[in-house]
Length: 416
Ligand SMILES: [Zn+2]
Image (cartoon, rainbow, N blue to C red):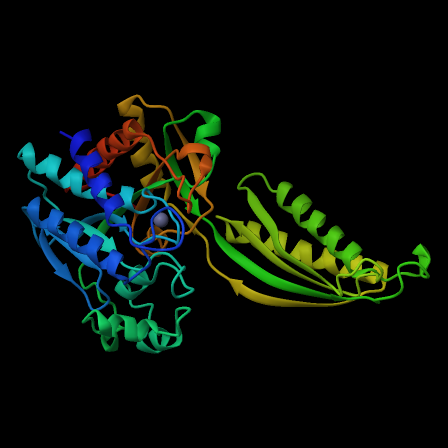
C-alpha cells in the first residue's frame, strides 16, 4: 500500500539535500554537489526497493524490475530531481518519489508485472544551469551530441561537457541514444506549476498536451524627438507602438479557445528612457505557447501581421527576428482515456488540462504512448521556495500512478 509516512520522510530527506545558494529554498542545480547527493540518495532508495539500477553516459538512472516476460517493452515512469536556484521541494521530486513508492507498494503486495517496470531519474531537466532544459531525456533519446555539450556553458563558463567529465560520466558517448531498451508507455506525475486545478477545485489533472514556445524579438525604430516641442500628430513613438503590440498579443491569444494559446511579452525595453525624449527605440521579447502547433502558428502569424500594420500606421521601422520555434506535443487519446478510466474508477475529481511548462515527458510523448498526471500546488506557485503540494494530494496521485503502472504492465492492456 502507498505509504504517506514513507513518502513524507523521503520529501523531508530531499529537502535536507537542498544545497547552498543565496536565499531560501532548494538550490539543487544539475550536477552540483547537492544534485549529486540527491541522486545518490534516490539511487539508494531504488536499490532498497529491489530495482536493478543502471547509469548511462549522461548520469541518468534507470531502475529495472524485470517482468515475467523480459523481452516485452518496459513501462517507464519517473521524473527529475534538479531544481532552479531558490526552487521548491516538489517540482520533479514528486515524480521520482511517487515512482519509487509505487514500486515499493507493488512489491509489498507480491505483484508480478508481465512487462518490466523501469523507474527513470532524468538528469538536468531545468535550464537554470546550462540554459537548456530536459537535457537528460534528450541524451537518452540521442537528441544531444557531444558538440552540444561543449557548446552549453554555465555562468562560470564551465561547459556541460566538462561538468559531465568531472562527475566521471562519458560525454563523448552522447549523440547516439543512450537508452537502448524499448518502452511500452511512459508516465510522469508532477505538480501543475499553475493555478488551474486549484481554481477549478480538482485534485488531479490529466495532461492533454505539453505546450512549447515560439519566441521572437521585435525591434522598433521610431524617432527620439523632444517631448515638449513635438506635437502629438508629428510623433513616431516606439513605446506607443510597443504598447499596441503587447495588447495585440493578449487579444490574439485570448481569441484561441480550443485548444487555448497563451502569449506573453516578457521583455520590453525602451530607449533612450528619459522623461523629456520621445522613445525612439523599443525592443520586445514575445513568447507564444499552445499544445497545438497550428494554433500557435496562427497566433504567431497574426501577431506578425499586427506588428506590420501597427508600425506602418505609426511610421515606425521594425525588425522581427525569430528566436525559437519548438514543437508542442499532444498526448494520445488512448492514453488520455486510459488515465481518465483510472481517475473515474478512483472516484476522484479530475479534469483534463494542457501543460504550459515543458517536462521530460514531452520527449517520450513523441515516440511512445505517454501520460502525465498533475496535482495542484498552492497558489500555482512553483520555481519558488514557497512551492507546496498537500500530502493528501501527493499520496493520492501516487495511488493513481500505482494503478496506471499495474494496468499498463499487463500484456492485455494496449495503447494505440
Ligand atoms: Zn519539473
